[in-house]
Image (cartoon, rainbow, N blue to C red; front, side):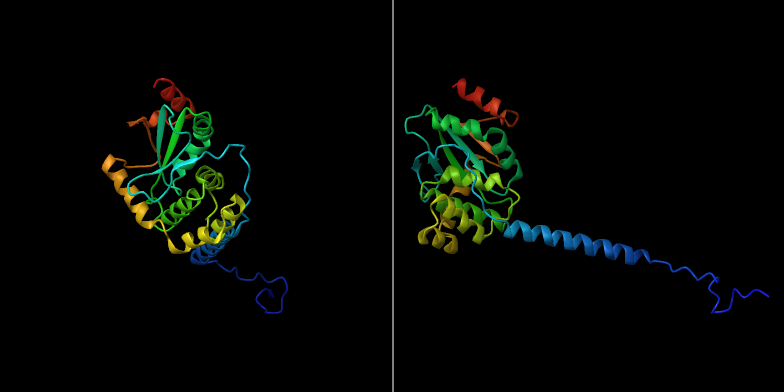
Length: 233
């Protein structure tokens, strides 16, 4: 007689346990959620480190606050004005900055062009308005270009209020007035007027670029395309 059925038999084959597909899916979801939480925590708590680009900070010709007018930087009397409609949570704007930012900054630095920032706030209903307001607060303190460079330079960061406060400090504009503007959303009304002006002009997406009032085609939103268009004016 076989002793395979006796409970004490070490050679007896134990029944295999099946793992429910639901358990597997649940484990995967838990792991994915944990990873997502970790990424979000890092984005919101990673250290702010300002990296020098070597680009000079242009003078602010028109600061934030004038209804329906963007922030203009550069040297008065330049032959070209570049209107840049952007959203600080727009990945395509980050790509444009990476591709063409140095060219734009050079044109501004050498006096060829002035640059007008038109910060819009529709990509992320929560973050876009907050970052646009912070940009305005920095621009009011003469740091429009430097602030924009840093926001796009670390696009993966959440740029929480604490991170924006630290960024302001490192840029030399982190005083009480700047921090109060962040807290009070001081430039909300101005940003609404900028958005309306963009709508009136027919701007439907970001980035959108105009050179002396003429829109630059999407396929020319490159460093080479921008430079050629400026040279042709």
